[in-house]
Every structure is written in C-alpha cells, then in structure tokens.
Image 1 (spheres, protein in one colour):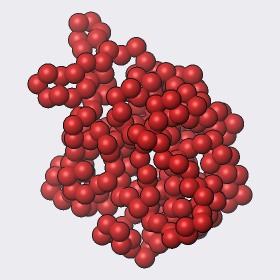
Image 2 (cartoon, protein in one colour):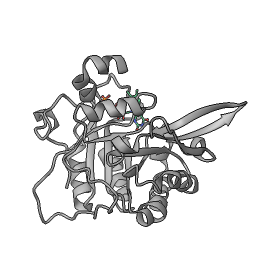
Image 3 (cartoon, rainbow, N blue to C red):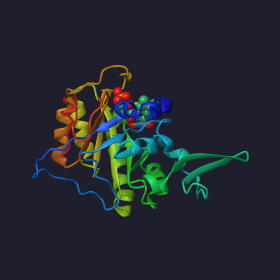
Image 4 (cartoon, helix red, strand yellow):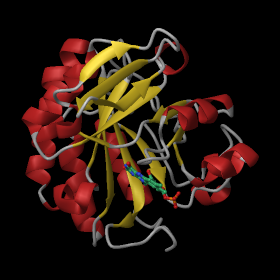
Length: 268
Ligand SMILES: Cc1cc2nc3c(=O)[nH]c(=O)nc-3n(C[C@H](O)[C@H](O)[C@H](O)COP(=O)(O)O)c2cc1C
C-alpha cells in the first residue's frame, strides 16, 4: 500500500480518508475545542490504519493534503511500561521496549512535522488503562486528540456502557487537564435504532468528534459501505455539538468540495 501510495498518493488518500463537511447552522451547539485540541470540522483526514498508519505514511498523507492524520490503533497494554526518548538523529520521539537486549520501537512521532495534526488511537477495553496509556503522550501537546475505536474486536460496540465509561474517563482525566480532545470511531450497528442509541450515548460523554465507518462489524472492506444511516448520525452529532466524520468508500474529492455521493456526511 505504501508503494501504491508513493506512486499515486491521491488514490491512497481517497481510499482511506474520513471526511467532514460543514453545515452553516450558526445556532447549532458546538462542543468547545480544547486549547491544544483540534477541530475536525471541514477536514480531510488520513483514517487510522494498523501497520499502514506509521510515521512515513502519515507524513506522506500530510504532504499530499491531509489536514489531520490518525496513527495506527495501538493497544494500551503495549504502550504502558514503554520507555520514551528523543532520537537525536531525527528529532522524533520514540516509545520503545527492550527484550533480550533488543529494543523495539512501538510508536514514533515527529513533533516538528505532525504535532499539530496527529490523532492517537488507543485500542482499549478499560478506562484505567486507556487513561494510563493516553497520559504517556498527553504531556507533549502532540497528539492533538485521542480517539478510541469502538470497532476493536467489535466488543465495545456490544458494551456501550463500558465504551462510554472509557470516553468519560479520557475526557475527565486526560482531555480536560491536558486540554486535548477525545473522540471515538465506531461502526454501524444492525439497525438505525441501535446506532442512534449508541451515538446519543457517546455524544454525551464530552467527546469533540465521532467517526462513523459506514459498515457493520461483519462487513468486509470490499462490501459496499452503507450510507442510509449517515444523515441520522450527523443530525444526532449536530444536536450535541459534536463533529461527525465518516468513512467507508469515500471517493476522491477536491478539498472543500465533497463529491455528491458524500454530501450526507455532516458536521455541526
Ligand atoms: C490496512 C487497514 C488498517 C486499518 N486499521 C484500522 C485501525 O487501526 N483502526 C481503525 O479504527 N480502523 C482501521 N481501519 C479502517 C479504516 O480506518 C477505515 O474505517 C476504513 O478503511 C474505511 O473504509 P474504506 O477502506 O472502504 O474507505 C483499517 C483499514 C485498513 C485498510
């Protein structure tokens, strides 16, 4: 994929972007954007991708026009207990673990080139560990936001109370003290009613953004994304003042001019 990206960056961006469009309703509520956070509205972003979303891809995406980039989902347990240091040669901050005299870098950020545009995605099923992992990063002012992935093993989508408690803990113990935004990414549930109930619940936790991957959990990437629930999800997010991002089969688009098939994606 990186090779393809290097040969044809716009295609890579088109395949794996989450996209927002902005409505003009000035009276709509708007969750305040934390001082060191990021406003997702009207942005084209590189979606979180394990393996693919490492530093080189992120820098490439930024170079070719992404406004924001997600790092790969990184499980909280793998980050807790790592050692942080700045690489004197590159200036990158690296979190690594040493085993049998071999050092493995688990996460690398380039504060100079991505600090104002990086979102760190935590894979977690525990409020305590999520907070612990997020705090490893929070002091740097980079990333600009933490997100959790409700699609992780799909388990969290089945336990909305746990997912909401993770987000609340992140908002209260990391987002507020460090003035960083917290967001969540979910997939569709089986019915609009179930999705609506989940989105409403998550929007009440204090998050600044919600990404909807327009597929249900069992759906494979080659299956066409479902757009029918998008308007409803955008409306719920808007009513709470939470930015709504969407992805799944997003077509190439000029920045600020979404293709017609994506006009249902909304942000307050
Ligand atoms: C290689 C790869 C890795 C992915 N890793 C993650 C991930 O770490 N976290 C996540 O929330 N979604 C992940 N996704 C899903 C994407 O973020 C996005 O939701 C999905 O690719 C959108 O569908 P599309 O490929 O049809 O545009 C991954 C997708 C791909 C292709």
